[in-house]
Amino acid sequence: MKMNSKISMLFLRAALVSALACGPVLLSGQPSVPSQDRDSGAKQDMKNAGHETKDAAKDTGHGVEKGTKKVYHKTKHGTKKAWHKTKDTTEGAANGAKEGARKPE
Image (cartoon, rainbow, N blue to C red; front, side, top):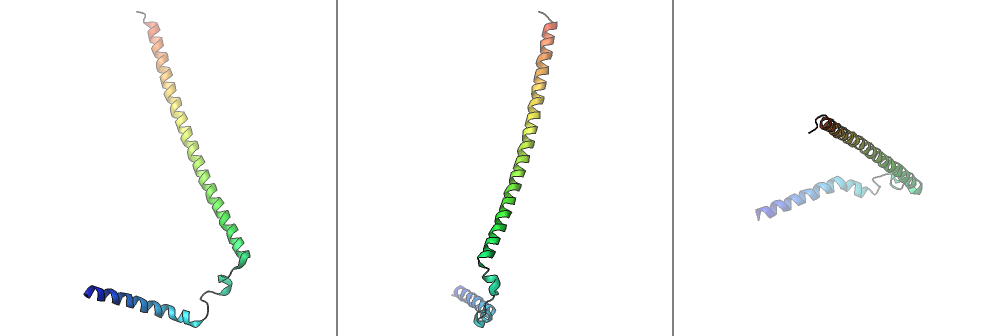
């Protein structure tokens, strides 16, 4: 019973605080936001949509740029690695062939 009483008092206090904080604004009859900001109109909505589209396109472009650079560098690294391995293998095979040619059995 003591726990229910504490919970009830907590909700009652929260309701009282919110009523005191929001009461004057709600009872004044005036909008809390000026009407010009609240009702921006179709023209401003279109401007906002255009800016958001531009920002989204920029973000996409930056992502593509980052991905392209990463793929380029990874491909370059992999190509160099394969070239070095092939070079070492080819030299080893050539040297082995030379030694085999020098020492007939």
